[in-house]
Image (cartoon, rainbow over all chains, first blue to last red; front, side, top):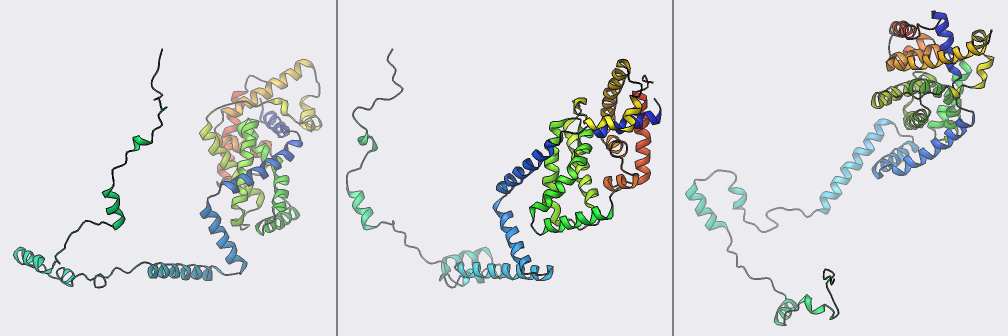
Length: 159
Length: 194
């Protein structure tokens, strides 16, 4: 087979095309696919895209877009910081020696002495509300009491 | 490969698509699907696979078109997506060959080369040509994916070397050498036919 014959034969392959109605159907299939893809997209992607659309609608440049995001981020962190109860040791009424002890490493004997001196004496009492006290005074209730008289376990087979 | 008016029309459709007009993207699908189909079909040799890939290619193009900056033509861009996705698909699929010659368009009868090949048409000659095309398709499947892509774009679709080089991201020299090697291989596979 010559080079010319081969190229002529290969060129005939361009006619291997589906019927014209195939391309109409393809367009419909692509539309369906696009809708499905849109529904399957995770929420965060949609949120990011909406943010981008919002900023682009206000014709903001890349720099101002980044700046706005940075401001939003800092603002968000500040708000979260304000909403979280600040956990300072002084506010909790814990002794200042707990902080001071970390500054210099004392000897083991001194450490033992410090622990006894600084730790507040805790009086432990069981937590009991008046309702709980009333409940404990009553007779105990058993779940088995609630079982109906006609109850038969499903595992009992009579052949 | 593409004249200025066609490229201007594409640019306008792309701008409209980027602005959120889905009808403009539909026009691009209608315009480029037949050629894209030919490319994918001649590489996969399977209609169902081609159909799935066509949807994947257009879906990817739609997702990526916001980033299209017009450094290449849309024609090159969409063919580039098509070739890369098809080659990736073929790597995963392995070898499977189900091309059917029944799909040949009736327009082939008016083709000059077809008329020349069947000029002195006899049942024996027609059977010979049909067998030859079948063998050619089998031979095409024996080529590597990269070689088949080059043959499809150059010989079947009639793209120039420079355009193929841009689509595949390789040099024109590589396109020519792949083409030369692929032709030699095809000729060897079909050597018993004269």
